[in-house]
Length: 116
Length: 118
Image (cartoon, rainbow over all chains, first blue to last red):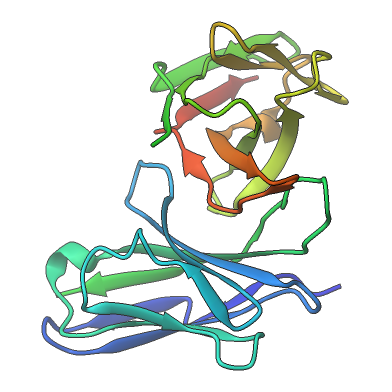
């Protein structure tokens, strides 16, 4: 079946502009996660949702970053007033909830954000 | 907070040989899961293998196996019969378990670039 999809795959924006990154999880997956990955580094957790509820947003770096998942499916990560330091790969992952088993996360291809 | 450390920035191996990638972690949790993910040049993130901390038996998946030492907080990945397609960046990751289910946040290490030479 279809995997996690993200759009756009590449985004170049000017400093100060707002951007919205979209994630479409695997159908039926309850949990959705956002990570940020700098070049040559491991992904860093940003936030995650179960259904439409944001369970943990402790990884969001500041209040310019926000995320929503209003209908418990597609999610949008929004970065306001972008800065050059926001340039990174933004990855989305989804997982089913299976009691007593780990929530294995399936990652999307990522959105490469470049702020000029 | 948990930390995951991969002390080998780069490794190389000849095709068909065996290589071991190291990972250590620090946590006060007693129940958790550990994972190895592979990121090839395409930059996908692919799950290679997972280990439940409560299981003493080391996980294996075909040519991939782990050496899990809970007391030492060590979780190494062994790749046997290396293939050119194994060339990738490998990430070790930690997920804590809470209340009988896993809490989904993954904490990743810095990664190890593995190159398989023909």
